[in-house]
Image 1: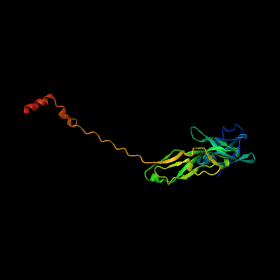
Image 2 (image 1 turned 120 degrees about the vertical axis):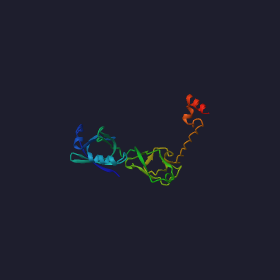
Image 3 (image 1 turned 90 degrees about the vertical axis):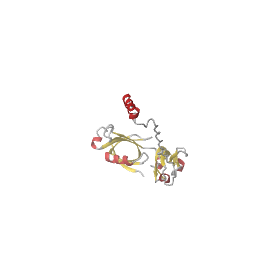
Image 4 (image 1 turned 180 degrees about the horizontal axis):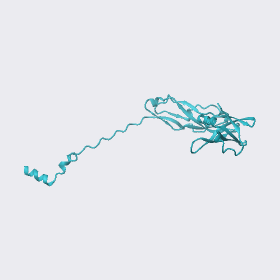
Length: 219
C-alpha cells in the first residue's frame, strides 16, 4: 500500500535556506518526465524515511501554486548532514508505469525454528533478493516463517512465495538461510605434569658451599 506524502513546488536554486525553516529540498525525476524541484515538510519526510523501504510506493501530492498534481514515486536516495545527521535532501524516482523496473526485496524471517530451539545456529546468507516487476506490482518485502526448519535445513530462493507479476533474478538454488549444527566445545588440554626436579623447593637446589660444609661437620 502506498504511503501519502505532500509537497509544494519550489523555485529552482532556492534550496539553501529551506532547512532553517523546517523544509527539505527534494527532486522528482524519471524517464520521459522533466525534473520537478519540490520542498517537503521536515517532520513528514523524517516520519516516512523512518518506516519506508526502497520498495515502498509513495503517493506524492504536489501543490503547484494553486493546482495539485499526483505522482507515484519511490524514495531513491536521502542525503544527511555530516555533523547533525539531519536530512538535507531527498531524491524521488518516478518510474515509467508501463516498463518493468529492478528492485531489491528485503526477506523477513519470522518465528523461532525447531533447529535453533535444539541448539542450532541460524546463518542468514541473503537479506534481500533482487526482482523485476512493473511499478504497480512491486512488493515491499517477503515474509517467511522458519519455525519448522530443523538442524541441517536450508531455505532457498525457490522456496519463497512470490506473487504473480514479479520475476526473481536470483538462481533458484541460492541459499537464503540455513540452520547449522552447534559447534563442539573445545576441551582445554591438561597442563603438563611437573618433573621431580622442577618440583623441588628452590632452597634445595641453591645450597651454597658454607651450607654444605656445615652439614658435613654435623655428620
